[in-house]
Length: 270
Figure 1 (cartoon, rainbow, N blue to C red):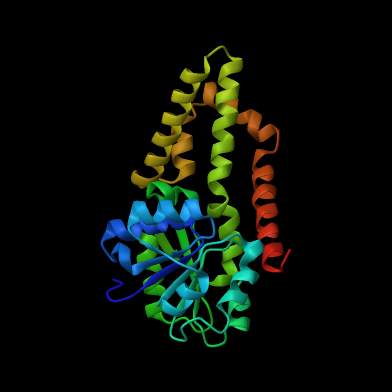
Figure 2 (figure 1 turned 90 degrees about the horizontal axis):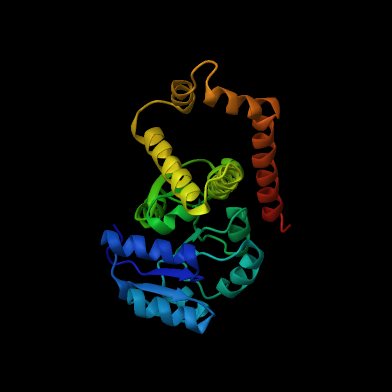
């Protein structure tokens, strides 16, 4: 619970909105106890009217918030840190959702401020996110619980060591885009076989939803479920053989490795 806490968001984009909506929906905090620093006036007005939050400057937020969620692009994190330096409440905790940015970058500029690094993903926008939290050097179990409370309203939360977060970014952070790409490709392929786009889309989206639900709820792993569908010499086997023959598994490994490497680069001010 966040009883008596003031929760601030620096950045009011889609991810911040997903977390705001989730934590308000859970009842762990009320709108007036949520602060948002969002430079785009139209966006700030929308968040204030939609969620009854208070909008103010970064400096004002930093001096008032007990928990500060930094929800900006990694390229502008250093500018945010500069704004926080000297005005942040010394008892506050920083929760960073900036991809690739290590907790140490905050800790070096904001001595003694506990930091929790988080990697969420975009399904948080529909309450089905996958978020991973990792403690910085000074983060306590209570700080981690605050992060878990904020994120759990938007989906599932697990805790790992920060050294694993670049891999997490590559897999679950970027993962939704990989699935959307696969859905696009299946829809395009269905149209080449003569199906219209609306029909192809309905078939593929429902198939993806059903398959994901089976993975989550059946208690069986992906390999077992795939084998169940794949009759020897059948249609599914013929399709899967094309993927195997063209090195699909190696391509997926190369894909997430490239994403991991880019996460590391962003953490090094790349």
